[in-house]
Amino acid sequence: MNINADFAMRAAVHAARLDWTPSPLPGVDRRMLDRVGEEVARATSIVRYAPGSHFSPHTHGGGEEFLVLDGVFQDEHGDFPVGTYVRNPPTSRHTPGSTAGCTIFVKLWQFDPQDRTPVRLDATPNAYAPVPGRPGVEAAKLFEDTREQVRLERWAPGAEIELAAPGGIELLVIDGAFTENGEAFEPQSWLRLPAGATLRAVAGPVGCRLWLKVGHLLNVQTVLPAA
Image (tube, rainbow, N blue to C red; front, side):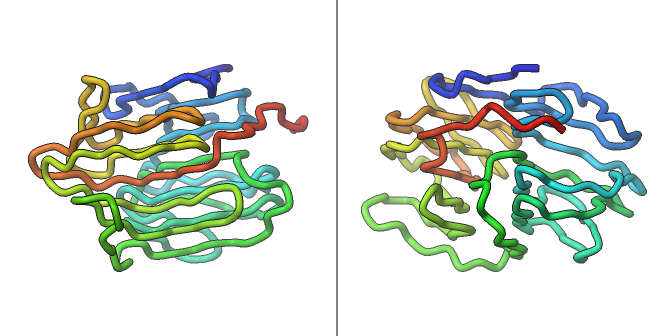
């Protein structure tokens, strides 16, 4: 299965407008944003767990990164409420689920194969700081290594955003809205621009809060080992 699989092209998905697609496990549904592969896939998705649903125990051969958008995600490592940012590196294992139900934004098979560093960060109280040279923008860093930086940003109402992305850029709207290339982006809207692009956007009348990743699209690996 290939969805937005040409990483040299702009891709945009307004996930809140999509129907939910059932996963192989009852009560776990998906809205697919990009995907290369079948059930073992390099994938970016929004995943919804119905109350009481869970996946079977499994190992993440290529790593898993997610942000909790709604509800409480749970596994044997703890309870992760709205705003929690998690990185489960390659070879990590868990049994995910949710007693009360939850929605997460999740990326699979997109780690450095040698990465073994878990991250479990409650992003909600992170201190946002003004970004030098970017008027109307505040940021809170979630993760950074030599390949990529992941952060939350807040854009002031009407802020005009121009950001060069030599290594590519990916954004998910958490709340508020922005426009880019004449297109309106609202909660659960996702935008990916290729390496060498420049993001030019305007925040909406109430501003915008979003998840953002940069630097990760220079050398995209889309050939995965067999399951």
